[in-house]
Amino acid sequence: LFILYINDIPKIDKVRYNLYVDDMAIHTSSWRLGTIQNRLNKACNKISKHLNKWKLKMNDTKTEFIIFTKR
Image (tube, rainbow, N blue to C red; front, side, top):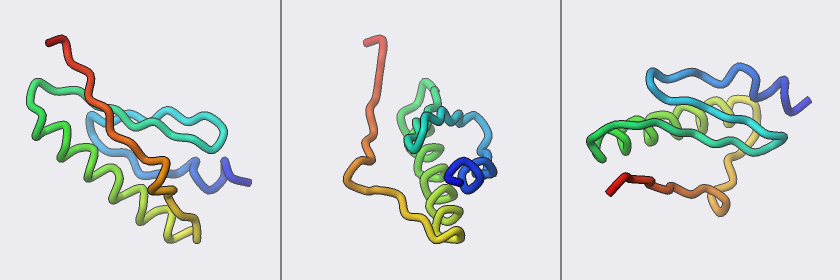
């Protein structure tokens, strides 16, 4: 049943989702940190609204942002 709830999560340009069982990874890339932050915040807000609509909740204690860089 969980797959039915999350299967139609709204898509956002240049943001990818990877799902595994009940976990989700959201990732994007850009040369500008501000662009990355804006995209990920927008994605989290849309996902949160979608989950609230279906009476589900994002687990804030398990939510993390990690930045990988070549520098």
